[in-house]
Image (tube, rainbow, N blue to C red; front, side, top):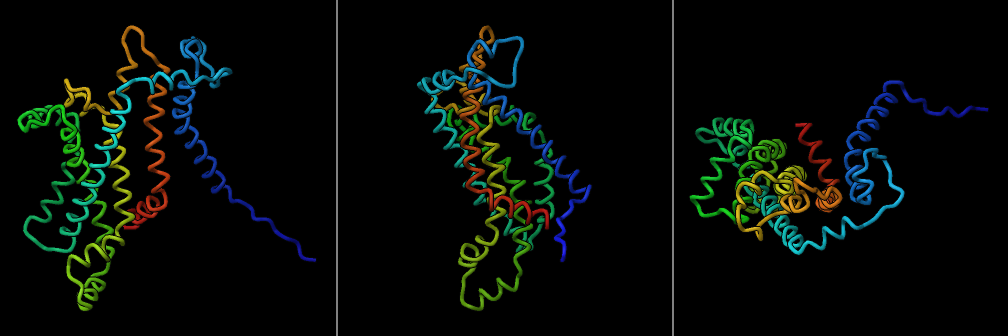
Length: 281
């Protein structure tokens, strides 16, 4: 009678799984603490002996957040900024990556090096020059002052990442399409775009997160017109130096996190394949 052998996990694999679990717990703990702070009553939040649980959860903090009459406007403004940045940067990066990969022209290498250099410059160092630039263009206190800088900062990473996906498409496929009568535009949108779509999704996630969580540009460029503010600025409503509403801050932060999680859920499959393609390249 044959015996059934159960699979035995190798020690290195078990150690890797335990390490991954510990890292996941460490990463998820701040999110848990944020949600817990949003559900705690005021007495527990201000307690000098914090506990990692609450015996009397309440939705009062969320109620205060949604009672803010400008919160809905802030939410819509954030969606407009993040959506515009994602769409514009994805389109421009796709065309730029195709150009620098498929065509040979002067200063092509110099242009790619400039993309790398642009990523090395800290955003904080460019905030003041960008402020004067937006002032001269008359874009202060408008959503355009938030959309344009984020598009500019997201393009270098997106172009570099998409180059690998465009290069992975064989040139023989392009030649076969031309022989079948397809124009360059048709090959670009009907054949090449679906093949590099996972890479576009991966770069769009980073663009969305950067634009959605932006506080520096929103604080610097939206000076007087609060109707153009975004969600990160809504946190200032609950933070007062004399008496900060930590429950409101945690509740507003939780509401801000939900759209990011929804976006991740919608694109998670293509995101994984896109990051895998980038690593493979």
